[in-house]
Length: 370
Image (cartoon, rainbow, N blue to C red; front, side, top):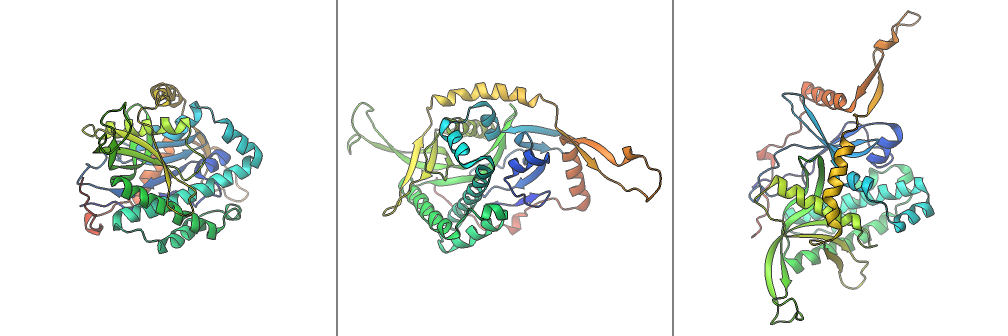
């Protein structure tokens, strides 16, 4: 069986803000390469395309690169697509105003790091079939160390450790309650319509339904059955928003495009509760959401966004002899993002540092009865 562990390579040092915010603030581009946290190659064939994440001043994008032809195809990220086309809720705007723009960026960055730590431990839980709470402080510290000093000032590691432990126990309770058997965690997928995203969880779970929908759920009016479900985790406790419903529908579409034989019957948002005595969580079925109907309209509008010309930036290169005449046009070059991507991959190829994980290096993956 094949297991793909998370591997990330960036083309520069970690920024002081989230990648999207840094790209927006300095006009930079940031490339990120990530392997899935977990992938069951016995249940799924590997994705047909190798996808890279790209942070730009316009938001988060994805792309594919053909090493033989040098062709680059850009996809708009699901969250960027939704963020551009669905207005932010009043609650979020009020919060940003109350804390200020800069601080809201910092808080967002710390919560993203928290979410990364949570996903890493959830991945280990899935792989090792054991939730090791002693690992919480180790992984929390690793993600904390990646933050900038002004971001670290907003984090209490002790509180992080306690919150993570509670949230992970809530996840363990969910896994038990629904007999959840994941087949993929954190997999990047792209759609021919021009959008891409990273789904959190895809797996099988056992649900209980009424036999007669008009009657109450009782021992004589219920049936258990297994369904394939996509689950999007949210670490916040303030509920779910309209944009979350559209986001889930986009993941379902991405999955069906990549694996047409699969039928994702259910899509859920999951979040931990702020529990104290017994692990609790929120699980919202978004499978038949009315807001999800906005999805196809958003995709059509996103296609227009992709028609905009590629962003460009100025790059300074070469050298100038002291006191000598020089042609500055040889030191100043304007490149667009497509050229930058090609140069990035050509440089990697020349240095022979292509990322790969050999089958022989992979540990045995747990077998789930699905």
